[in-house]
Every structure is written in C-alpha cells, then in structure tokens.
Length: 270
Image (cartoon, rainbow, N blue to C red; front, side, top):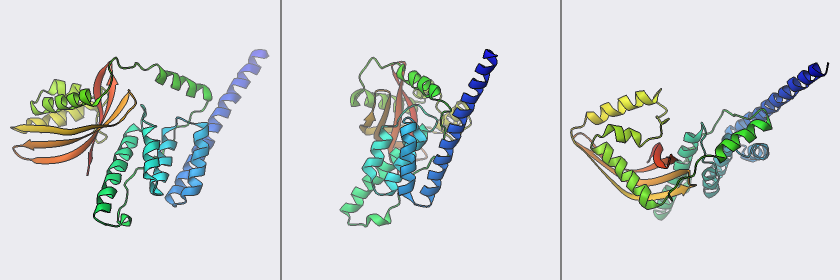
C-alpha cells in the first residue's frame, strides 16, 4: 500500500511540473502575441514575471531585449543580450540580434552626423517564438551545474591572441589549408542553411577550390564582449580573388574548447 501511494504521489508531482511548464509556455505565447500587436508594456510585464521563475531562459531574455530595442532603448537591449550569451540552441538568434543592434547603433550615430532623421531607420531583430521551459526545478539545477563545471581556459583572452587567431584563420582560408581552416571552427558548427557539418564543408571546399588566387587581409580587430567562454569579435575583412573582391565588416563569435579558440558564428554587418 505504501509503495502504491508513493507511485501515485510521484506521478502527481510529474503532472504538476508538466502543467506548470505548459502554463509558462502559454504566458510566453501570450507575451509574443502582445509584442506582435505592439503592446510592449503588457508583454514586458509578462516576460519579466516569467524571468523571475526562469532566470536563465534565453527565449524570454531575447524577447525582453526585443521589446527594449523596439521602444528605443538600444543600450538596454545590448546589455540584456550580452548577459545572455551561453551554450543554447537559440544562441545563433542571440548573436544575430546583438550584431544587428551594434550595427543599428553605429548607423544611427553616422546618420545623426548627416542630420538624417532616426525615424527613417528600422531595426531588424528576430523574435523567438518557441519556448523551452523546464517541467521541474530539479532539471534546472542539473542544467546549471553542467554549465558551472565547464573548463576554464589556461590563458587570458586579449585582443592580441584573438587577432592572431583571426589572422591564422584567414591564412588557412587564403592558402587553401582545408584541415586547419575547418579545425578553426567548433566541432558542431555549420550554418543554418546546411543540414550537417559535412554538407557545409563540402560546399565551402568547392567554393574555395574554384578560386585560382585568394588574398585576405584582416584589420581593426576588436573584442566587443568576452566572458572567458564566449567572445564576440568585430573586424574588417578585405577579400580578393580572380573573380570577386569585397571589403566587409564582420562579427565573429568564438568559444574556447580545450584551451583553443573555435569559431561558432560569422555575421556580416551591412
């Protein structure tokens, strides 16, 4: 009888956790509906309440930053996103939004100098529509422990060693050193438009092989944010080949794996 009671209690506790997660998801969806209706004040209150219960939820954090940006608080949006960088399935969205915010901020400063109205500008951000709330507090604690035991780098991250890494990466690309070029990226890295790392590598190699001569120059390397595990770097890339040339400003996200730098994302700032 005692065992049966315990089993019933366990099933009820699991059901309670699932119901709680469902309720949180409903609130998250409600906030998104309000955001799309541009009722930012109500949406913000809901998301702030959700954040007190789920302080590490990247989806909620991203959408709060979305609201801040849309209401003109660019610095606050950047602050929120910079604090949310972690290993998460939505990290690509976080970085893209952060990149767009920096680009928008720089563009506003430029246009102010030319006396162009800010109202003509529209910031491009992504809203996360799928939530991933935990069904029990125990799972949240376990997840946090895993993050806490990630190994710390044995070296200090600074603009010098970041610059050297970026220059080496460009050198591998320029010299068609495919093994070291692909080794410069995180082991699980591949762009969203590809189904796997293998398909991305095949496509990338074909495009590089297609060029007879490649020349790449990197300049103005600057660390934008660094929490000793994830680094956001900005630099200017001048690319020249026999068939194409351009100069772009890039944001590259870098993580540290076994005390080595690895690229986790690449974004061009237009």
